[in-house]
Length: 294
Length: 298
Image (cartoon, rainbow over all chains, first blue to last red; front, side):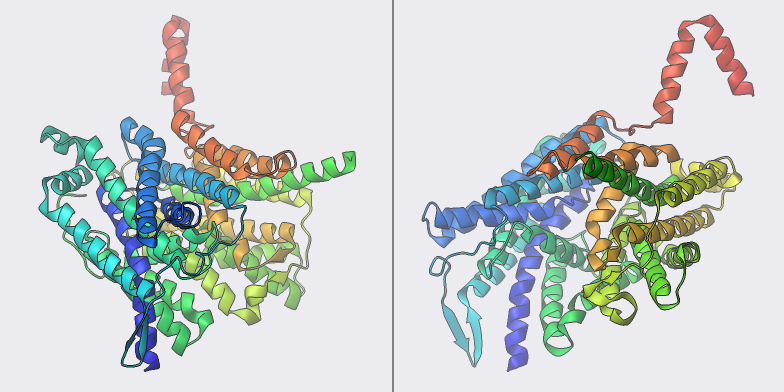
């Protein structure tokens, strides 16, 4: 029974990582950017959701939407400020975009620290749904269910957008070869902004659900960045379903290894697995076929 | 007041010198066309190896530096052999993963590293020792730049396929660059430990990795001197300027990074831009053009 209970806890923690990993994977696979500023989208998403509840007194559902919107706005702003100038210059942008994403990571993190006075925050009791579901002795919180449902829905939605719509095809085309996509009549700006906004919204949601279950500070995004990063590498970035699976896997591994092995080995197992996957299967557990990239 | 100012200035210079050594470690991998964050892992290996030997076996600074350099070099060679076959984006990810794993190992090897409580470093590093070591590293890299390895590394960075066609052993050059980076990184780690006087798992983590990369790229990734300038600007200056600015210092750092990256993409030290400027100037005067021809022939 303890095992089942911890499995549920692991899956709900994994839902948060999955949301983050999906956002990270969309940006990495369509824009070839290693975006270290991704964690602060989650921080700002959580902060806006918190303010929606405490300052504006609106219900949690609105706060969730506000968090997603804040993440999307942050992602689009970071893209336009930090990545667009380098993109328009052309050439290999990997190194440059790493530096500019670090720049905005540092700046937005400090801004969050100033905005909160570096104090730990928490959603006041009663503002977050506090229902409890008993399924044969296993206790499931409503927020846990919400997080899991949200992660599955967002992953499915982004997957469908990328694979089934014209806009998604445009996003993938720009990621594959910008010049050829433009020749084919795709406006790269629209495609890139959509991808950034989708990634930001998913990351903002990750921040909200991560913050809903505990007290948090302006450093919330940093831990999420490292674990989400592990999830996305393990699951593979070519496909958002792989990234989401990686997120759930990391969540389950973290909780179960803390329960059955030792809390101090929790990160050792996660990051050890990360390195092993990188060495053995560099494209992730679910390798997608990539054609035409040297 | 004047005394504290002087002490702060000295401490800023000391951190800048060590920062320069760490930046040079990263520069060597970029030289061979590999983007690696792993310098921090090499530094951690060097620092914890040396600190253990200094407190348990009574090593002095110089033997500890040798041991730290060796430790960093061994880890780098092993990591290089495993990771170099990944292509650029994945190599960058893998080296970030290496930093995460290194921290976990440091936390869990409590007997050797002090675990999460960290460890006091028994040996103090003097300014002249830092200057000497940085001088030696620069001298070594300047010599290396003129060697066959330097030429091969540049060729590998610019176009690995073309370099391989011309008979450059690309994989071997990159592995060698990784190993050299490891030795320099290990030495830098020992010196950093000697400056901090106390190290724990967080002394060598993502924030240091980010600073080091920023030093290299903004200083100029195409000449070893760029890393030194970058380190002075991005590790030395903040230590000194901290006293004047209270809150929001990181915002200024971030904006500075962004502005330099967008408006000075080649970094502060950019030999290519200088050559273009020189060529433009000499094209204007016929005498200059003649000199240019002579330079090319020599």
